[in-house]
Length: 193
Figure 1 (cartoon, helix red, strand yellow):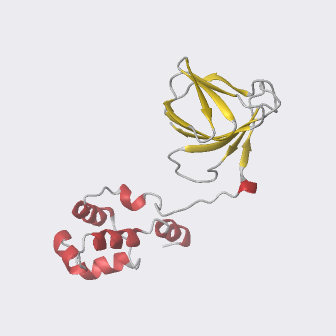
Figure 2: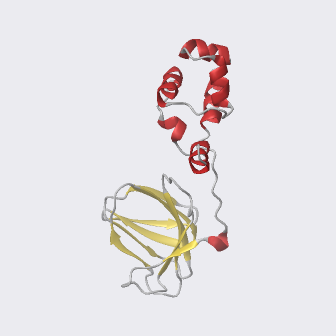
């Protein structure tokens, strides 16, 4: 097997995932062998990465644990992406918006296989009615006000949010926000589409 193919297979850590499933069920190698019809020696080689399972072999194992094959190929759930403040990506505004109205910084770049998007939105003080015009998109949105005060208009209803307040709403309904405070308003915005 060439190095590229071997590296691609090993990055999924199939053996480690297999061992974790077996230990969670308190099964010995012999016990798993009895349930799958595979030998304990073969299962040991799979767990230690000395052997790569075929799809039929992996299917037999997956059936015993009640998981799909995707369990073995999904990203590592223990992965942790840290984004330091100075490495955040600042998003460009629409060309029609004043450059000093709202600043968005991506809080979760470069995380892969994201289930949500997280941003820091800074509504600049000193700019009249700094905010975002009415918009809508699929999914849900969560806001948490860290500094200042924010007006949220969702589906025609106006809400005033102050420091420590949060809002969760369906984003397919028209919504907009604008700064109410005289100084900067900082808001964590989490979107799941």
